[in-house]
Image 1 (cartoon, rainbow over the protein chains, first blue to last red):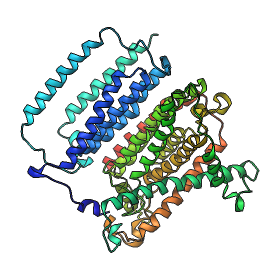
Image 2 (cartoon, rainbow over the protein chains, first blue to last red):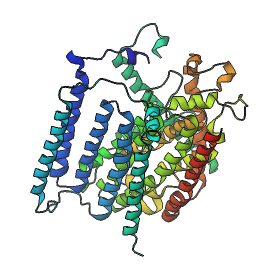
Image 3 (tube, chains in turn blue, purple):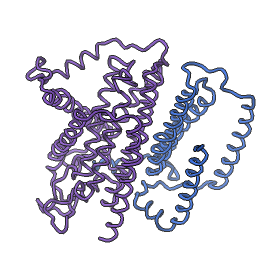
Image 4 (cartoon, rainbow over the protein chains, first blue to last red):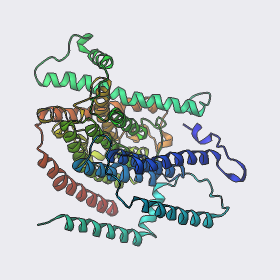
Length: 179
Length: 351
């Protein structure tokens, strides 16, 4: 399969990978559409399934950025576990087929300014931080390098996060158990 | 593969070949398993002949069955959520097809060479749960919903021991790449005895057992068939499906069995390789080109061996109760798999 490596990549002026940018745009458009569907749909299960599309889009963007380990983790954790638990919970409690009339509560409009504020802050940080820098086109990071990083220079933050997660898990059990 | 040919195949041609190869690699094991084990082996175990009329020895029975399913009307219940009802079997089947993408069949005969191959397989394999859940929900049927919920609970519980069992193999091979795992087994040695290589089924026998049990549960096969328990739930999340949508679930069930058996043979039985010392090969680049042809045959043999074991268990044991099923995963398999990881890690550091 050596043809894959020798295949020409469409690289425009200033080393910008055109194909990658087009792919980014398409996936981003799908994600935005799906995200709007999550909040506008009249059915909880449909909302959850649109959220699966959004999270799958995030995984696709990671793949496009050559971060395959993160992309796979995204699929395993969010689509394979978190969304399954979401759907499981919804179906155990309330999951009518067809439109639901009382999905919105009175303060739904508050979400709009919060979302716009988040968009503004993140957009400003990214645009101001990167300016005209062109991120070089790299191949995928070998998983071995990643694991060396986790168990080498980043061991202490890694353990700290594990500890936080453990505390959260124990807290969840303590809250859930009534006896 | 293209190095063997005199001309270079263009990229779209390679992609097309990969897709076709993937379809063959999924459907061929599925058909073989259904005919050989579901039709014939089960019949012999139950002292009957099984299908005998269609073709010599009933070998065309599967073609007849598929033909029958394909001409049936595509029915969806009136109260069902039509679009999701129709989408659900596709999600399950697509997850199966994505699984095979990382399985290597020879030194150059692979679909893609993902550096996190086995991790990808575990991640993609878990997507089918969503298909099963929404199939149960969208059918607008109490039995279907119960079956879907049982399936989700079971699949979440058994995914953990499966991942943990794989970790032992990854530690021992020192890589998550399926190709590297194959090489590590075929160049290894057991106590300096090189002739057999080091198939991880010997050193990771506990991991192998946990993995095969978890696979059995992931496939919702007996004794783990609470989600489709036909004596209580008609047939669980598949109750309302008929025609080619039922066929999709059926194909997905046995194709996933085949693909998981392929993955297990890569992880534990040495994959496509023979011990490299037999032919004096040192590393992956020394392997002769004919292994690209012999490799798939070796893989198919190992897959049949493993699916034979899975089907043997399937036809032999009675069904678990729901609480037994969950207790078995959380209180038995997961601690064992964790102990296996610790032991493997210690031994890896010591030797």
